[in-house]
Image (cartoon, rainbow, N blue to C red):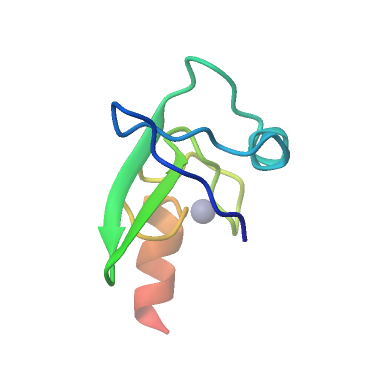
Length: 74
Ligand SMILES: [Zn+2]
């Protein structure tokens, strides 16, 4: 966990080790949402954590539609 400060325009810098781990850089598309009182930022083109397919952009977890459907059956 890292602590970052908002600048005068309320922007943050994502720590370099997080950018490298998620393979994002300047200009990368990110999805921002609120979950349980927290601001969550994830790469828009995230891969499904189960099968590696294209994850649903606005899902709370990086999963594809097929895997979401399978998880809901469990
Ligand atoms: Zn999947």
